[in-house]
Length: 198
Image 1 (cartoon, helix red, strand yellow):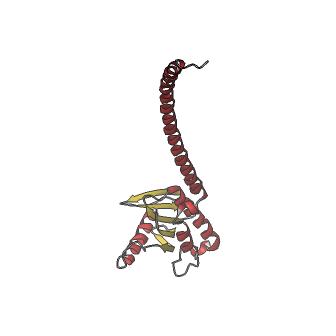
Image 2: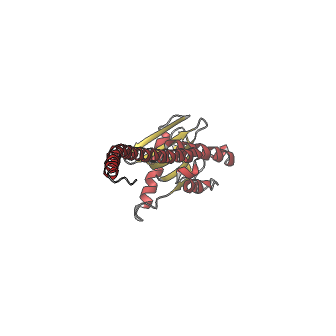
Image 3: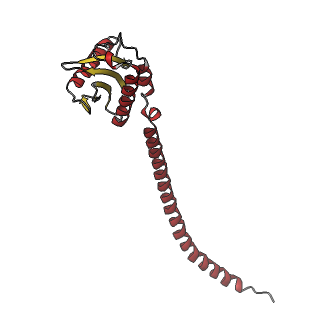
């Protein structure tokens, strides 16, 4: 599970304007990083331009998922992640970032802003904190703990069943042993009965 990009944009009448973005392109080769970053910016702008106000969507492109949230006030956020990253966590992240951004940056600056003029530094910390969705999102953490408990319980039940099967085998063997023991005991009594001392 990996997050590659977190962007805040303004959805204008004709095009989307990038206001601020954070990228993690460390998994790409050094010579590809700038091209990958430009492509992520282009994709984010294109997705916001084609999305309706007040909508959330996930767009799949090869092994990547682009999660977009466009608010009714034209503020938009895009997360680019791999296929394994949970959608719910991505949209929770977008909602948090957009709420915080709208409180810290004046609405007047949105239509004319750019990454150089907008002062909002939290994107990098959000991008690094949400790399592990289990740690960042309480619901995902609880779900992971439940899954672990379920696996442990399942393994315990299997071992109990195996133990139960082994006990059944022992019980059946003891029943056989019981009849053989009784026969041995009777034979031994008969053998010893000839030598009674008075």
